[in-house]
Length: 253
Image (cartoon, rainbow, N blue to C red; front, side, top):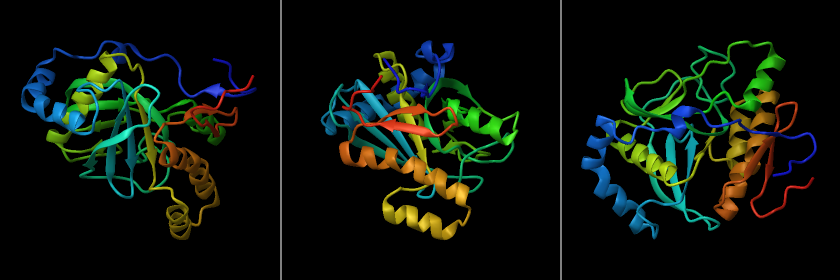
C-alpha cells in the first residue's frame, strides 16, 4: 500500500502474543462453555455469521460504553452489543505519561489476548501507538506507560473494566475473529460521542486549547464511521497528528 507523502503507518508489526492467542487456556475454555451459545445468538440475531470476519470496537469515556460492531468484508458494520464500563479513572483527555491514571484516546487495536489476567480475561490495546510516541517526544516524556486493557472485574487505574461476564463475550468474540483471519481488530477510543454538539459540550467544559484541538482531530474518525459504518484508515503525520482516509477513497502516492 502506498502512503500519502510524509505519512507514517499507525502501528508496526503485530506482536507475537496477538499472533498466538490462548484458544485452549482454561479460562478461554470455561468462558466458551458458559457464553458460547449466547455469543453465537448475538451475532446471528444481528444478521452475521457466528464468527464475523470483521469486528470493530468503539469506547466512549464520558458515556462509559464499549460498542462491539461486526460485519462482513467490504460491507457496512452493524452494532452487535454495547457493554457498560463499570469503573473509570483519570479525566477526559489523552494519556501522555506513566502513572497519570488516564485511559488513552485515539486510534488503537487489540495486540494481546490475556487468559491469565488478574482481572479474569483481558484485551490489550497497542498503546502507545506511533502518534503517542511522537507526541511524547515533543513533550519530553520518556515513559509513556503501557499495559492498557479492556478487562473483567470492576477496578481500574487507566484501563477499561466491563466486569467478568461481559469480558467473556468480548474476549471470545475478538479471539475467534482474530483466529479466523482479522489480524488487527481496531479499537477507537473517544472522550465522548463527537457529534458537533458533543464536541461543543467538551469545549464548554474544558478551556484548554490544545485539548480542544486534539478532540477536533479525532472527530473525523467518529463522524466517518457514523456516516458509513466502516472504520477509516488511519495514518500519522510526522508531527504526530492523525490523518484519516475514508474507506473507499484511494490513498494517493
